[in-house]
Image (cartoon, rainbow over all chains, first blue to last red; front, side, top):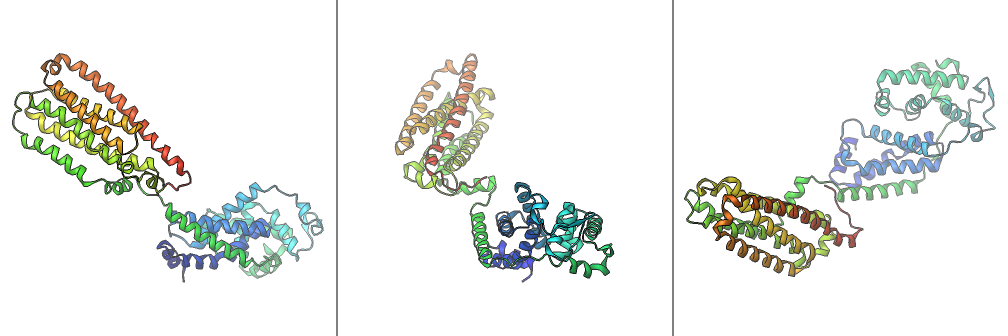
Length: 175
Length: 258
């Protein structure tokens, strides 16, 4: 069932449609939250909060864009809130053995830890765009909507993000 | 960038996500459904929607009684009043108009439904506030009609007519509200009727004494009007607040905002 119909049915009080909507997007939202939070338990908590927030504020939701984008917006905001509350760990304490650096470049670019570390080193806006584009497989137009910025700004952030990521992962040919 | 997308995806690929816990997902679904149902219960309704909802619960006899009070005024409209019949009518009609609403406000107590109403969707204060507002507006409409209908041929200045009509009305309201503030039971209705009868007797007797209705006494009427109005407003606030005393026993109730 498409999102528009699902939302219409939820509005009419059908909780089975709500069930279907959650099942449809749970994994995507969880994956996004995990990549933002870097912790499974936190990601699961935030994912749960995303859907609870969606349900509690369902009346204020108007079907103008995609429902998926709306969920990503909630997820993004809740991740930011959760990260602000969480005490930040020094980068060295996260993956000390994997972050063997040479002139700021991560050597072992083929490992999950180094990719994660490289992503972590990106500015917030660029990391956001890269995550949504390459992991969540969203179109630039949708990413612009989610991050509440213009399309050209989003393109620029993606370009800058990839350039920085390429440097960090020693992938010069990305640019 | 497009031609490099495959490469980028390949390079970013190792940062995979552990599979989500199906139990957590089921829990999320369960909690989301509960949150959705709770939202349905606590959904906001507009102020006017709430008032119109409460309007249906006001007994029809209140409207009928007010219409019955207006009938003689409308029937006599266009004819000059004989002697001091207008003042006598003001003295007896204004307390009656004020009194009519009170049994309706007290009906939750006289029917032993106060506890149930305090634990329902809306708090007792909101229910009572809405009823008082509706009945107050109805009273004002009624008094305006009486005033308008008798203004043309009474020969009295309009300002004095307002005073002669509203002072008995305010005094009756003050007395009934004081009763309502202290006696929230079936007896409250009886006490209110006593207050109403006393006001009717007092102001009717007063209307027979011509000196009190002459231009020289207007100042005293104005003072009485403002004093009674001030007490009326204070008592109204106090009575309105006193309705929370009962709801305090049901703190856990879900009160819908409006």
